[in-house]
Length: 226
Image 1: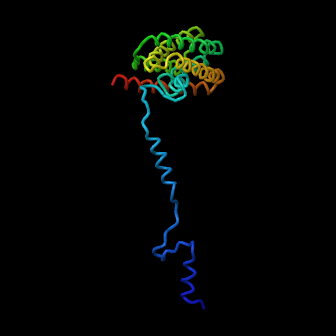
Image 2: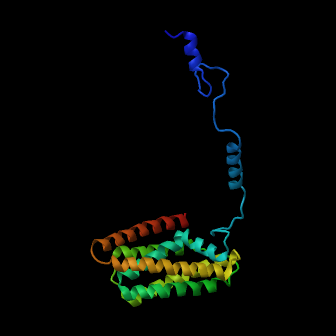
Image 3: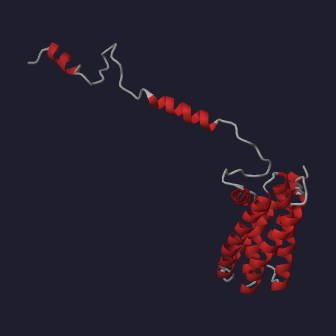
């Protein structure tokens, strides 16, 4: 038989964490790991320059313009809605949207750059989201000319508002160019999707997306006039 002393000696071998071994230090992470977390947290909490309604990427005005468009639903929703509207109306209408909307967006932005203060017009912007979403949800059979006219009108308005924002933030023409190029890419991809999905149940899915755009526009309108 093994003695109790031998059992106690085997239960307290070096490197094993014994429950009944008071005074022994439990192994764990020490040293630079907590310090590293503290340094990373301090860096994340450092203050950065703030820009109202704009995204500062740190990569220059062009990329700031790209970031501004991608995170601004007031611009993204009508832009994507116009692309889908053109796609549902057929390839010719989609081409009109693809080239007409970015051009009008850029021209409106050039006019907006002449302003020294930012103009927002939240109620009007909400109405454009409602209008484009409503046309999608209603599935109105519009001709290429009508689709192009609606797209150019919306693009001129939003481009002008973007131009005033770029001017107020001293980002200027390069940021506007970033917005316009990104709009072209998004329009090309989304309009192609609309053309491909304009028949059958996928057309209904696009109409449902239009109804969600209407709901979002109503929320934006209520927030604007609160």
